[in-house]
Length: 166
Image (cartoon, rainbow, N blue to C red):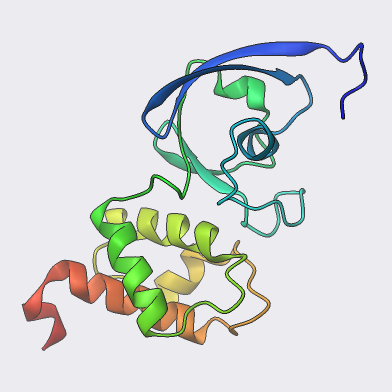
């Protein structure tokens, strides 16, 4: 609950493809605003200090930590959350995370998928080291990362097609 005298910012942006107008406290983070005001709870608030990666969203096409971006900074921007992330990379990653047990509790999964999708867009055939490096800012307390790296490798192969699986 905000104090009654809390200064508010007007926000007009596109979220998951639709125009959104709203207000947010000047100190409210983007991930808090998305969750509390828009009901988009796919991105999680883990550490709230930019360390864990659970809050990842896309802001104007780039993956950012939603806990380090103020909601007011989204004014005029395009925001995409895991709820609408439906490109071929995300679809392949979702399937691979399930097939390779790359998730357990699921808390880190939205951030992992957005970060891994960004990697696969830049590098369609990443090494295990490149995958680990790309995901190094995403904490998972359940899987030990091996299964996550396996899932990203499998998604990369699937996206490259049948020749990549040979």
